[in-house]
Amino acid sequence: MTTWALIRWLHLLAMAFFVGGQLVLVAAVVPALRGEADRERLRAVARRFGWGSLVALAVLLATGSAMAGHFARWGDGTLHVKLALVAVAGLLVLWHMRRPQQHWIEGLVFVVSLAIVWLGVALAHGT
Figure (cartoon, rainbow, N blue to C red):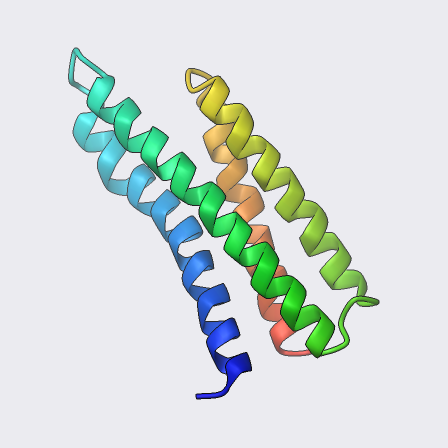
C-alpha cells in the first residue's frame, strides 16, 4: 500500500464515519429513543457523535489538503465549492452542539454532507 492510498483510505473512512453516522442517527437511534421521557441518552449519543464528527472533519481537512496538493487540485473550482461546504458543515455541527433543540440543523448538516460526498466523487473521477 502506498502512502497516498493510505491517505485516501483515511479520507474515505472519516467521510464514512461522518455521513454514515448521520444515517444511523436518523434511521435507528433517534426513532428508537424518541419516545423516552428522559432524553438524556439521546443527547449523550448525539453529543458523542458531534465530537466524533469534529474529529472526522479534522481528518478530512488534513487528508484532503494533502491530496489536493499532491494531485495539484488547488485550482479546481469543484474543490473550492467542496471546501466551502466543509466549512459550512463544520459550523453547522458546532452550532447544533450548542443548540441541540434546533433539529432543523441536523437535516441541513445531512444535506450539506451529501453534497460534499457528491463533489468528492466528482473530484475523484476528474469531472
